[in-house]
Length: 291
Image: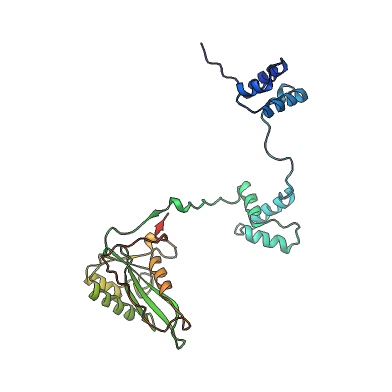
């Protein structure tokens, strides 16, 4: 026996016919796996509009008081066409200056531009539960070195902090306060850490002039020479770009921020080192993730 598939309208029509023939609505609802209220609604709709009224109706409301009017939406699109570099925020600002009322919100203007193909919608950010943890598999495989400013001593003098973290153990191998973060001062702190803890396989830094001449004449700075003499691979972050924590020295920035202090809190520099060793494993903080 061939399988006969009925459309939604046909099933509802049969349910209406059964109810009209005297079958209890409860039995009809159980047979078609719907509620009794749905069967009563189908009966009313069939009486009012016939077979065509049993089709699915759009769920969109008839009116939306807070929806942007077609006139304002046209003005938003026209502004974008005249000024392609203007974004939704600038367009809303210009509408307010021109006395347009009501002024749409930034997201309303953005949605209008997306609907008309004047703006490419950006990719949504992934949820944090989809991020992947990242760290090197063993200690001394990678050091992350960075420089942080905005640190004031007890006498009001602004200083810099040269920080370095072992990527696996999170051990602070460098925490040196310097008056000026010159290339020589940074290299002295780096060399002292090498003498105390040993030589790592790789070092990750940003593109500061203390670490590289990448955007200068392209020569070799003192930091590069120390790495070359000790067989260390020097890795740099991407220029003018905020990479994920897997490829940046953001971990050292967080370490420096936790070490920073003000005269009202502490007068001791540098802070005492933790008792763990570079080979000791520790729990990776939640921030050490990448997308």
